[in-house]
Image 1 (tube, rainbow, N blue to C red):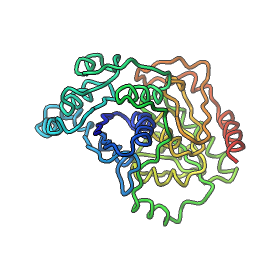
Image 2: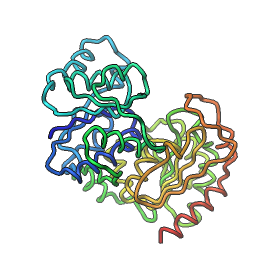
Image 3: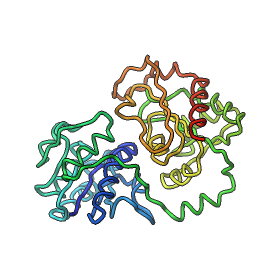
Image 4: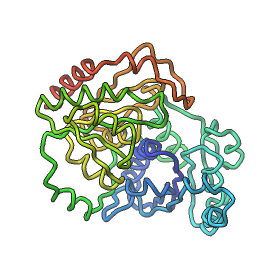
Length: 336
């Protein structure tokens, strides 16, 4: 059996789909399982050791958005028609028109997806529509893949791909004293951001407790990360990593604190003790999922909405650094 997974969204989207695919891999180790993924997140699945998937097809969705009519975008998209009849089943786990179109090009008449996809028109391209089941998106993904393949599946913690060279270089670094705490400000939109001043105050507390504190940043000029470093008054240092480097560093991290963002979901997937700060998004649906100790903080003043608002969330503003520090102490006590 040859199965193609289409999940090309944000890092968190990929990580929330992965437990279902890991369960399928465990149940059917002889099947070929490939994945269409955004180029940025390919290190999650592809490396020197790839425990879950056989192969990946990387697509540059950021370039697609910036240059939708460019010949290169068209060629990228149409490459998937060459896969037609290469797979017995294609499963669109994203639910957008773009992911459904990729699945339709690759899957001939064997494309499955949610009956209520994120973008409703996508369902018109499916040959098999599956009713959404479960509250958390991890459970929903497992139910979708189970119905599509006919294999009973329970979400399974997944081993991420390993890039041996990056792991070796990270292990050789001399600036990773332990215990290591990583703070990750930012998120998909402004309403999901805990105030940088609170992160800075938390860094000062953690430093006094003996932690070496780093602030995760996608680039050296990231304003959220720089604001946290400044607010920490020398207690935290900027850490700029690509995805493969972030995976390697998180494997050596003792504590992670962040909002509803890809790095938070990555830390949870890697079993790092994690404190997640939630505001407008519902942790019952989108919370971090993984085998390690996880503590989620959400104030009652937060109202669930997925509108990409830049306005500060009142609930997040109510969460103090002292509240987070208490959660850290409780979390680490349970982790010992």
